[in-house]
Length: 175
Image (tube, rainbow, N blue to C red; front, side, top):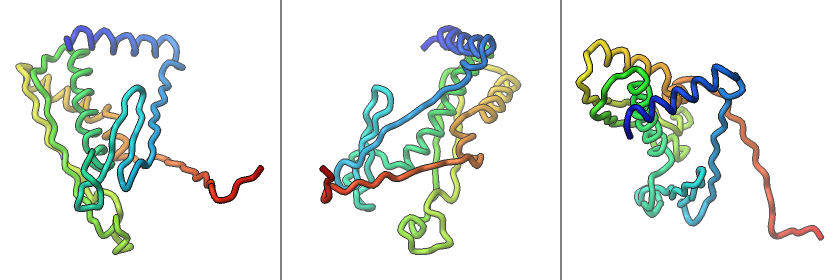
């Protein structure tokens, strides 16, 4: 996609927010459902995803698992932010590729050690940027991306998460 298009779209959003602060609020959502075994489906806007576990964890390996989606979300979010800010700042990019890795101790996932968290112990990533821009421009771009990437922020900042469970029992019906 041409940088001019991206710059125009991003600039339009920024302008709309500057004109009316209520334009700064966005809500994203996903609907998920357990399908069969460990396989789930997710509906996000007009997109359907299949989520599953690898065979060695009891799944059928018909899609990425949730923790892999977190890693993909981090990498792709950073790539998107690189592209958007490069367009706005007039920094040419040939390519941005990110390798993301998360270390997870399965003892926490399976409840085998109460002192081990079920999620990632750590996440690391390596970003490869191909650009004819100067080192100073690329340093500026990296700093902006690290500061403004939503998924990086979500993963590194404690945020409130609330959930509720609605129980239904199909064995008992009320007429």
